Image 1: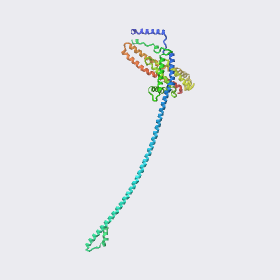
Image 2: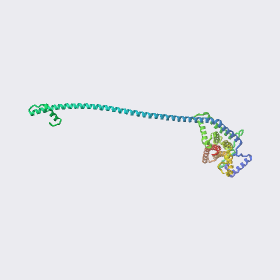
Image 3: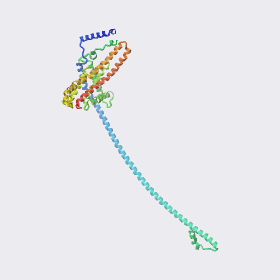
Image 4: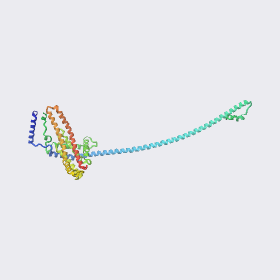
Length: 189
Length: 250
């Protein structure tokens, strides 16, 4: 039905309709506030505000404050614990340093004692070695003197025998003994 | 052909609602729900009182923190705490009232009528003037009307302007900003709805309806954002006005 009308006819019909409506009842201004809406809006908003202020928010804020206090207390506890840990760490470090120093002292003392013991043992060993060496030298000298004496006797006997054969008469060994000893000692006869 | 099928409803049908007694109409019902919803939420949150907030309590505490951190502290500054209940009430009352723009069967934002924004703006107006006089004495009016540092001759010009802007225009602009935004959004959604209906009844459904319907969907989502943003803007402006009265030297 509407599709068959021209634009002019539609506009004319619309204008007639508006005039008719304006004549029959007054069109309210949609921008102006109405009393009933102001009153109801005020009632509900002020009720909400009062409830928020005196009933609804205090318990929530109390919970939030308690939580904040707990968090602060936990933070303080953590801070205290950290301080304790630092103190204990410092005490531990101090004890470790003392133990280390004591250990170094003990090691030094042990080293000195060992050095001293080593020196005394070495000294005793050297003394013993010297003593043994001295005894061995004496023994050696004695053996050597015995050997040399025996050798002298034999050389003197051989020399006297040989000389007796050469001169054709017996030679008194005692009379030529000093000469033989002088020759054996590297001197001249 | 399409224009012939478009029948935009009369404006009084768009914003005016019948009453059921004592002037209680659809707007009053939305006001009641806008009061009841935060009341129930906050009551449940306060009753639970768990140290680790979850669910409703988490939502409510986050909302309060949002109002404190994003509205009260930046707007008022030092001494903001007593005004948090008022600002929280502003934010929730306006946001929930606005969201009825997209809730089926209601589809009418509370603040697309001038009554509720006017009440809220006048509340903010009375509050900031009271706060100014309470905290600064009558010197508050002198501070506002005769700003320090201005040459005395200019007071002839500045004082009437300050009087008009602070004490007369401010509540009006505060209310109208919210009202006009919500009314415009409401009319926009109605326009696209009417267009969809008109296109549906014409023969161009396949060609045009997807565009008009998408427009309706997009603007509906947009209006959800506008509803929340307008609540935030109203609350932060109220906070700024109160902050200006509390610390006029700043």
